[in-house]
Image (cartoon, rainbow, N blue to C red; front, side, top):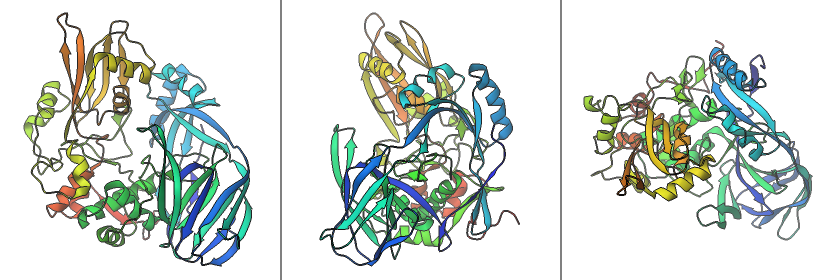
Length: 537
């Protein structure tokens, strides 16, 4: 086990911590245009082209590249509690004696002030050269653990990049990275025809992206171009709030979301993307960060009025997850189905008061009645006049997904690698406080198979994933009693932990303050500004 807590000193701009977000990769070249004055810098921040004011398109292209080196491993368990992690390590070593604890995060400093401690203990095993090789070892640790594959960059890709304007009046060749640094952080950079793969259409699509702040171009794992947005925290929050919920929502909701997103960003520093040249990705792995142009007065005000504010618990910033719509009850913060001691909050009825008849959603009789009804809840949008941004949530308060038996059997084979034969039944074994399933058993003609973890359950029973794991299973049977089809009847979308964005928005529409909203979802809120706090005093 690695010992000691590391000291992490945050880079900052005008007192605000800087975050680096991977916004695209796998590009052969990138054309861009900037609306204001900027510098071109090398990897170390040295200026190579100064005070550029150009209406021309510019291009970044690769002169030569050399791939980096990556390793893959399994994460078996994570905890903020060292003793609990050590207990789990003893269990893991009964399966593989090479399991170890890796310490992530540490004491976080901003401008000589300690603003957080996010030390986390992660049990890992394996040193694989490919993701596939790592995945082949997952079953060895089930059902005792819920392994996932993680990757670490051991050696960054290297190469030579060229940047030049459309008339080739200004140009430079730089090793490894080209940084485009606007004079004003609000200056917009437009990136043209960025390619991505559309899973639904099964083809490449192209889209213009708009970001503000510094953009760094460097080589990705395949030797193609990646883009990294380097942005101060408060500017980061504006785009995150827009990306997470859209525009035209109440100010008090936007303020509550700003605090929750800021807390999550600060809480997860150096917990993911190990060895990479960025902190987070744009996809929602931590916070969504989309390259669309937008304007919203309430988002601007919300970030300004809550500047630096996060939710503290003792000497650390709370990790404050959120989700689109809980379905009427949020879930306990758990890891591997166990209480998540670093989170300090439990699931609760998403309404002014709890209803006794739905007090125990871990009970199958109660949860059946719950799912088949539309109880009063902040996130029940029926009959409410709502902004366009909330329309997507309407279809998730209660939902249905249908499969023929053969379809579902094929999905299960592909997702789990298990052939259970004819699927007869899906048995619920453990539910959380919101009714979300944490463990199920598939009853098959060849074998039975247990699945643990809400996300693992959702992914195993759908082409992509079910909206949530709070569901009932209805079967249509033939004359012999063999299932013809399975229907999942469910509630909510997402993991259900933390703040229900839909419920919080409705609370704001009904004149609740951001403090009341946060207190509803995260008990005993202690809201403080990272620009004022010093945990060493």
